[in-house]
Image (tube, rainbow over all chains, first blue to last red; front, side, top):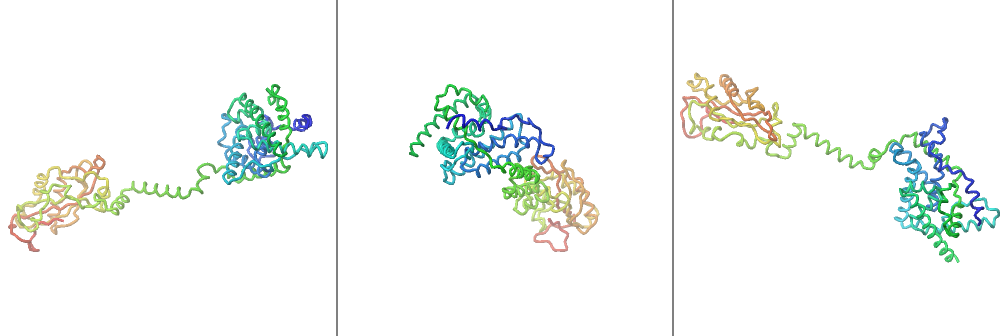
Length: 204
Length: 264
């Protein structure tokens, strides 16, 4: 899989998650939600979903947890203080806690959150059926290997590659410096590389 | 992708750069209808206003037993601040300070008519005496004296002077006529120790004696009752005994028709 074939569809996506707050005002015909919340929902929903989807096994669970994140944010909207954190940081904090609670519940019930079945929804831009199968297999290997990493590595990789956040945004979410984020991502990728090699050997 | 994303990536080895590109190539798309479904759910939640019920009020249904216990404790606390309720609790629990069970604390023994007075022995004639002032129940400010926490009850400042005060009010005419009797008196002893609003609760049968008892009561001086070190008003009940001069001391129990002093 070449770099260009991967980057092209990815780069073409509009990443609303990194759009500044209130860049576009709430539609006047949409008074059903608080205006601020409406904008947050529109700008950050996809990023939150992708972050969650990188951490959990199935699309259904990802949808449930994403719903829970925004419902919780709506219920505690009055307690949000814009002086303390940006809306995106606040939402991702809720999302991280929701994912952590989910994984903890799985462990409590004896389930492993790591699952070989956890395959992201494949992109459909592969040029041929054969290439697409190879690409899907590679993604399956990557996700299976990522699932064997420790939680901190999975989290920071999900924020980077799932939610598509930059170093500074990840740093705000995790409460660390941007340099520390870069170092952690580099180390997480090194561990992922080792895990991929190990997984490849196991798969034969 | 933001440039910041790639900060420092130039120093990475090729395999890490390739891994970075592969991971960024993983596209996770939402289900088409998910955004609209979630938004509809959020609107429904917002309209129903459940999001306003946060914090404590959201926890109430789950902690109703704790809320009930807190309500009972609050009710008990408030009720104990109401004197009649507190007095009822004291009586229910048999608290000794609530009843007239220990009148001996209130007045010295010599101010009380001894049992020998009842059988007519050892008593001076032509005198009057006081029984032990004891807390009154159910009258006026009586709940105060039923306080379980009451530290002291009122007492006579000078028992001898009190005896003289009562004797002075004994009408001479009745003394010489050999008419005596016992008058039960209820009086409010104020925080300053002054008696007020005296009333006859047990008549002697002789109006003049009752009137004399009321006059004598107004002349008594008390040390006020205290609670928590602070003087408080209290109602007390006691007997004033008028003994005629003509009565002869004699052993044995007095006959019914003889007007001998009796304590309540």
